[in-house]
Image 1 (tube, one colour):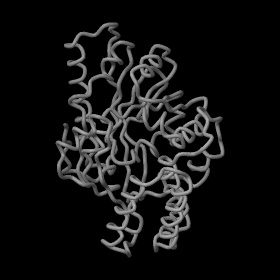
Image 2 (cartoon, one colour):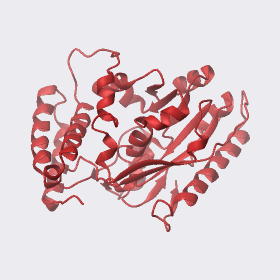
Image 3 (cartoon, rainbow, N blue to C red):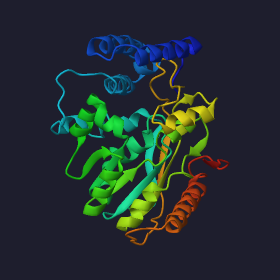
Length: 338
């Protein structure tokens, strides 16, 4: 267990630092100074002292989070691949999954195969930890599914210079990360050379996040079903138990925050470990792959077609959740669909 030596003062201080980072300059010098302060706190926390690996992963996680919102001068539009950086994050290096109590990919693994498949992943959570460590950086998943494209928020993928750089660095012949736009999805599906992985809930699902709650934003998310019908892609539901336990989140004023999220304005306030609230709690991340939902190919699907298969998807997601919640240690858990 990780000790929380600084208590509520650390939480308040962390939220204050978050406000300073959000409202302060985005230049490299200011953000580097902030990182130095947070790094000192992280490196001297009892959990970091007890575990060298936790210390390194924590410091590296801080670097990535701050780098994502820092403007770097002289940046390129596209970066060359950097295999060493990818190895650093996987089991060949620091292995980001080792930060968590347990991070595993489970469920219908035998059904994972190359082909025209879209993996619809829930919940988004604050940092999409299950998606990141159990799928994006999971070598076993990639060996099974073949070439796969991970579709991310457009603003983050294209407009965040350092995050864009890191996505380019970790790309391989069998994996790429692109913006979750209509154009990219339709072009990728038309080629049919990649499976795809998508977080359908987006910012709204991140806004719904509350510690210990299982919530998905899916009732008004049918666009991906339409695109799959147009190109004959199957859909596989994926759910991560434990994602909501990585952070405590502000849960009030949900309706106005969802309205902001609809306009792609992040409307979530969160804190993780008390000695550095930006870092997630090392919860269990158990990601379950569901059964394949085979869709017909309909060039111009009618509204009734979309509604029918969107309904089938929601039923399959509910069935996946109910089937595995006991195995995940949550026998009484309930899935809330918004």
